[in-house]
Length: 193
Image (cartoon, rainbow, N blue to C red; front, side, top):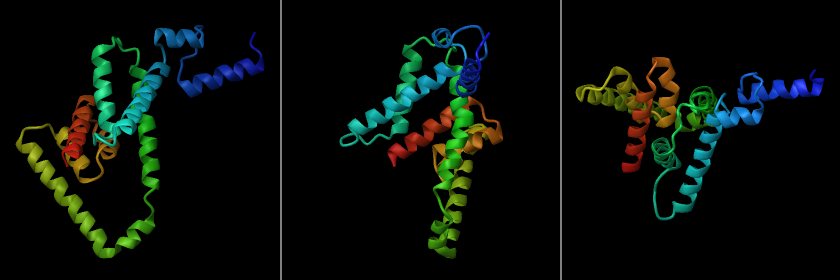
């Protein structure tokens, strides 16, 4: 029988880490790649390495932490055999946690910013967004991209890059491959600009 303290600890760890309630110990879950913990940890590790690489090279290489994360993720995926053991955690990070992060990012833009712009400024911003989106849709359709990929690239270019893509992708039910391609395009556009 579990004590009340042990039961609470087991319940909290299963909620916080997403580990299914099984007979395996926490260490066993990590070792065999069950649950969401391995994917969450590898995502966190890649983020830390990406920011560390950006911080240490920013004085002589102008590459964003996001692009470093792409490069490191591509290398890790191709060099380390993962066999799907990280999928659940990566899915959690790239869907639910990313939505929360985007919402927090939106909170940082206060209404005062819009008031400082004034009516003319807001109209110019909206026109700029609209023209960029329409031009992006026209261009991506002309080169034969899918509707979802066209929307993702156009909205990412017009609005705010990766966070726009992440916010829009669930609404249009974009495939993960399309999201990855759109993110790569937007990151490359930013690098070139």
